[in-house]
Structure formats: structure tokens, C-alpha cells
Image (cartoon, rainbow, N blue to C red; front, side, top):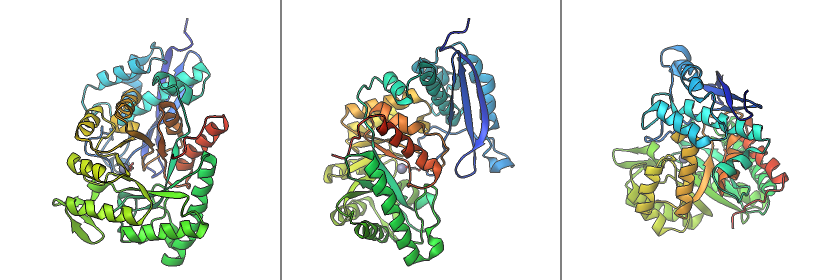
Amino acid sequence: MIRKYEIVGLEARQIFDSRGNPTIECTVTVGKGKGTAMAPSGASTGKYEAVELRDGGKAYDGKGVNQAVRNIDTIIAPTLTGMDVREQEEIDRELIQLDGTENKGNLGANTTTVVSLACCRAAANAKEVELYEHISHISHQWEHKVPVPFFNVINGGAHAGNKLAVQEFMIVPKTTKFKQSMKIGVEVYHTLEKLVEKKYGKSASNVGDEGGFAPMINKTEDALKMLMKALKTRGYDKKVFISMDVAASEFYKGRQYHIDGKKLNKEKMIKYYEDLIKKYPIINIEDPFQEEDFKAFAKLTEETDVQITGDDLFVTNVDRIKQGIQARACNALLLKVNQIGTLSESIQAARMAQHAGYKVMVSHRSGETSDPFIADLAVGIGAEQIKSGAPCRSERLVKYNRLLEIEKHGIKYIGWF
Ligand code: PGA
Ligand code: ZN
């Protein structure tokens, strides 16, 4: 007899992400019900991230995932069949062992991620509980709150065709309800759209990969000034903080940071950030330095009182996070499941960061799908913050919309304070 939680089969398919690149969808069937997940994909990927498996060759410019799909059907499915889908750690341990590499290079982190997430959703469905409730159970996190959204409204770096070095300019509303934060987010977004069109022309309001505007702005401060103007126009300048994902590894060349038409060393970069923090209501800077420089991260964390978040620095990897905690680099972790390749390892990463007093920000990738998984993930693991791009493009909004639903269920909003 097949038991309710017993995995009876896995089925994978090649689908397409928000950039039109192939990605994987996987459905896990259990005795009672099933669960489906889709794999996201980054563009400004960290050097130490687990790696995706792509087919290579001519088709889809080498980005096909047929081998990854075959890995699920022929290697992973026979191994996981018969297991109890509620045992996430055991499932993920099997995936790690089957792969056998440090960076998921054999099966592919896209493959292991999608299987890991689909199992989690199948378990929640079979248990007939909300996904965040099941995640809360497997991560032993009993207090859940709706996290603060970071809306990425101006795109640069690897996500846009302009000359902005900084990859993301985000707005962070200070409110007591997630619903109110959404209202401020979309209102500022639409005001910004008008300002961008006025200054850079109608076509300048085309959006970048994460739904933010990507006009031909060259300098960091020009983007910040435009953002402040949008906030003032709406009367929100005292109600909204600003956050930046610098993604500095992308413009670190020949031991210098190439930004705003200048070449700055790390000491000058620290001064650069300190000046910006004085002038603008900045509360968070992600990846202010290249991904090897724990010392520079530590110095900025020490010298300023804003949140310093490690993304490419930590890559959701407990070894790198341990190194960061020892070096006192950062006070927040950016968490992306596909940077490490399984849900259990991501939960471990969050735990380690939380124990060290770091905040956790759950993140989408620049290549996304209609899967809202990260909304439930953030609530379930007790993350304080989430970034899922602009309040524009459905692959971004599907996560924010799910959080609206969760708040409506009666889960409290964490707020910034
Ligand atoms: P990515 O960008 O998904 O292209 O890596 C997101 C980020 O850097 O935070
Ligand atoms: Zn980042």
C-alpha cells in the first residue's frame, strides 16, 4: 500500500524563465497529492555559488536543460521514490550525495534546487497546511512574520543596458502593514515612471530584468536624486528608506572599482559610501565590495550604522558565512536557495546567520518564474526582509501578492523597527 507521504514519482520539464531562457519545472507526486516548483537563475552570479547544469551546444545558445531534466527522471527519481516527503533533510542529503561535488556541479544546482523545493511543497500539500507553516516546522522556527519588502525600482549593472555601476536601487517603506508598504511601493514606482519619461524620454521607462526602470543614467547620485524626487513628489520622503545592491564584483577590474567614470580603491570606496549615507536615507548596502574582500566588508560594517548585506560574499554557504562572522563582515545575509542548491542547506545558512545576530533577506533571482516559493520561505524561516524586484512584472509581483495573502491570513507584518 502506498502511504500518504510516500514519494511515488518525480516528473521534470524544460520551461522558460522571465528572460526567455530554459529552466526546470519539477512535480513530485506523493501518496496523497503533489507539489510543483520552478528553478530561478541569476545573471550577476557569485564566483562561489553552486553551478547550474546547462546543455551547451547551439540550441538555446547552450542554455538548454535537457540533461538536468534527464538527471531528475533517471537518477534522482529512482533514489527518492519510496522516501517520506516530509523528511526534507534526508531528501536533501540524498541529493547532495548523489551529486557528490562541492558545488553541485554534477547534477546541477538548478536540478537539486527544483527537486528540493518541489518536495517541500508536496509535503505541505499532503499535510494540507500552508507552505510557510510546513517550512516553519522543518526549520524549527515557530514565530512567523511577514517580511519587509525591498522594491528594486532603478536597475543598473548586469541587469540593464545603461552605464550605472550600482545594480539595484531599492525603496523600503516604513509602515506597520505589508499592505501599506505595497501601496507606497507602487505609488512611488508610478511617480518615478513619469519622472524618468520627463527627463530621459518616453522609451526610457522600459524596464530592466527585475522590473525597475533602466534609463540612461550614468552616475549613482543621479539615480538617488531622481529617487528622492519621486519620494518628495508623493510626500513619502520621510516614510521611505533607500537600499542599494552594489554588486561590486561586477565592476572590480585591475584592483579598482570602476564607478561613476572614476577608478576607486577600497579606501576611497568606503569614503564614497560614507558620503552617500550622509546625504540620503540609505539603510542597507548589499555587496559594497568584491566577493573576496571580507576585510573591506568588515571595515564598512564597523564604520557605519547601516545594514551591510552579503550576497556574492556569502552565497548562502555556511562555510563562507562562518568566515564572515569571524571577520565581522556584514550584519545581514542575502539568502538564495539556488546559490547553494538545497532547501536544508539554505535553512542552515539562515540559522547560522540568525544565531550571530545577522538579519536575513530572502531574495529572488534576476531570471525568475511564476513560482511564489520565496514568499513562504521568508515567512517560514523567520526572515526579516525580502527582495523580489520592482512592483512590476508578474514574476516579481507573484511573490509580493502571496505575502498580501499571508498577511490577510492574520500573520503580522514585521515592520522596519
Ligand atoms: P542575480 O542578481 O540574480 O542576477 O544574481 C540578484 C542580486 O545580485 O541580488
Ligand atoms: Zn546581490
